[in-house]
Amino acid sequence: MSTKPRITLGLPDHPRCQAIIDGQVGIEGYELEVDPHFVSSGERHYKYLHGEWDVGEVSAASLLRAIEKGQLYHCENHLKHPSELKGKKFGCFRYGATAVVWARGYLLDAHNIKTTDMQWFVSGREVFIGHELPVKVQRIEPPPPFGEEKLVLSKMLNEGELHGAVVPGDNGYAGFFGGGETPKMMAAYPDVKPLFDDNQEIIDYVKKTGINPIMHVLSIRREVAERHPDFPAKLTRAFMEARDVAPQYMPADEIAGYRRERDELGEDPYAYVMGENEKRTLAAMNRYQIEQGLMKTTLPMDDLFVGHVG
Image (tube, rainbow, N blue to C red):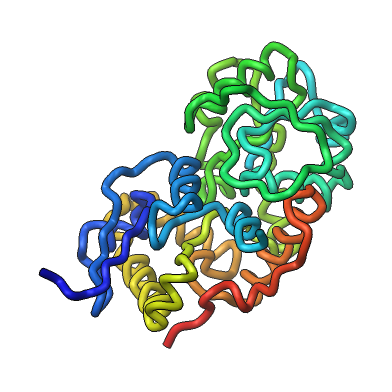
């Protein structure tokens, strides 16, 4: 019987995690147990924040809220430009989802549209919200199962009940360079189209602001880190090792896409460090969540994340 500490992990089946999932990369002195059930990201985040695993990939916005206590779509018949959003009814799959926080933050900084300038409709189950919101949010009770929230939004957009909606689309190089497409559920109705289709505008905005939206982060339960103080740095090193061998799990076009993303941005978005870019980005998320009523306080980012490992 193993006497090593057992650590449970809830991870996505992504190439950068695959070497840990299949056991190629481990952590000396620890027994890692990866949950073999790869559920949708929303359900994974919900399970981690409700105590399912010791380590989990989790929504960055939800994690900041828990510590304290996209893509935009429209129907082309009803909306032409972001400036038309004021006073309109906007849908999202979760009010507190990271993609939605970033989208509202972009509308605030780039188009001067405040969260309170719009009406809000939510089609899915929230992962975690710890404060009363500054806007009235219309919801479906009971909400549809995780993964089915987008179809509700697409139908309502098509029928004119919503003027716009925020759902997560492709991230990374596919999001930057247009390699992705409208998610299948959002494309279920032919008139539902992305509101922003100028990829260069997105790249220029990231370069100008230094904010490259962080969607998900790896989180360790505080009691696990306190009980095993060497574990956080070892875990970070393990994910760096898994990242370095990830190309063996990727087709050639995916490898080329990540290389193009790194070259275009002038940095590696998957460095697993807490550098100035990461601090700036997470501080922006903190600011956006305060404006959106999801948080009340500014958190000290240096105290929340393992930034550098030897």
